[in-house]
Image (cartoon, rainbow, N blue to C red; front, side, top):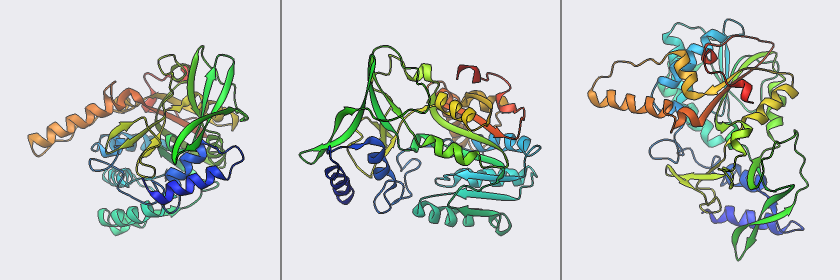
Length: 364
C-alpha cells in the first residue's frame, strides 16, 4: 500500500462532515491520483508479470477480427480511428499492422490517454514497432475530438470508471460509503441522496450493486461526433443478469498479479479496482443521447461471426499457445461469455458482420 496515497484518502475522509466519502471518490483517488494512483504512476499493470490480461494481449485473434469489422465500417464513415485508453498499446500496434497488411488505408489513429506514464510508454513502444510512415499517423489527444468522423474503440473503458456502491434492502436503497477506523478503511452505510438517471429494475431481496453517474459524461462526448461507429468491449451483462440473487455482494473486485481480490481496501494504489458493467444502463444512455445500437453480443459470438483466423505457427509450442489464447477469448468460462461487445453509432446505420448471429440487443 502506498503510504502517501493512504494518507491522502484518510485526510479526505476526515475533512467530510460525516467522516465518509463515496466509493467513486475513493476509487478515483486509488486509480487516478496524479502522483500515486494505480494507472497514473505505473505502466506495468498488464500481462504475465502485471495484474491482468486484456483481450488484445492474447495473440493476434482479437485485433484481426476487429480489423475486419473496422474495414466494413470504413464503407460508411471516414477512415479515422480513435482508441480511448490504449493501455500497453498492444491493440494499437496490432490494429495498425493488420490494417496495413490487409491494404486498408486509414488517415489517422488517435489515442486518448489520460495517464502521462502510459502515454510515454505508448509513444516509445509504438515508435519501436511501427515504420516511420505508420507512426506519423498516430496522434495523442487529451480530450474527445468534437465533430469526429470515424471508428471509436473503447476496450475495458467503462469498468475502470469510478462507481458508487449501493445496498438494496427490499424497498430501500442505502449508499455504501468509505470511512476509516483505526487507520483502516471500512464500509459505512449512509442515507442515499444520489439520483439514478434511469429507473433501475432492482430484484427482490437484499443485495449490493455498483452504479456510475460518470457514464453519461462519456456518452455526452460520443454525441458530439459528426458520424461514428463505436465499439465497447467490457466485462459485464444486462441488468436482469446483474441484479440476480446469485450476486448478492455485487461485482466489485480487485486484481493484483493476475489474482482476484475481494478486499478492495488493501494494496491501495497497487491493485486494480473494477466491477461488471451494466449494459442496460449503457443502452439507456444510447437512447438518451440520440445514438443507435448496432449490436450487442458475447465476445465469442462477435469473434466467430467475423471468422477466426489461425495463422501457421513456427513451432508446436507456438501453435499450442495460439490455441490456448483463442480458448481464453472464446470459452464460456473465460472472456468468451464474460466479456460483451456493444456497437453504437451516430448518423450511421451499418449492418455489422460481428453481430449477424446471436445479437442479444433485445435483452437490454
